[in-house]
Image (spheres, helix red, strand yellow):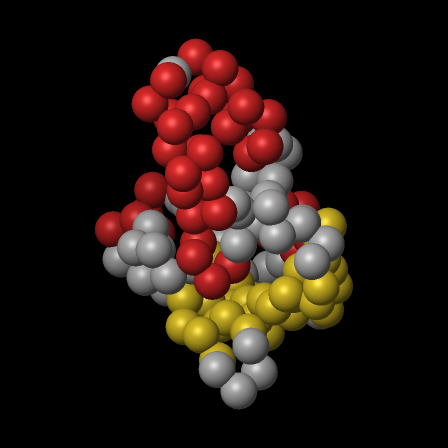
Length: 123
């Protein structure tokens, strides 16, 4: 199954997020500019379509598929959390974070915490 989710580059940076050590289940396919990985009992291929959308394909499922893949992907990336609003809030409360955002704000764009099942964290 193929589809897409709405996720701007400011909210989701695949290249940083999937290669930063949170999960070791992702491998970049250089020729196709996509990522192959496993989570929620499915093998996925994901890629950036443009600055506002991410494409996905469920390549294989290891159990009876009952949940909408789009919903699973949005949950995995926690796209219900608005990073820009969080950064603004944190910067208003913490002078050090505010200075980091001024000096190195580009580094933070699209970096978020993956919502992984506990067992996925260990293997």
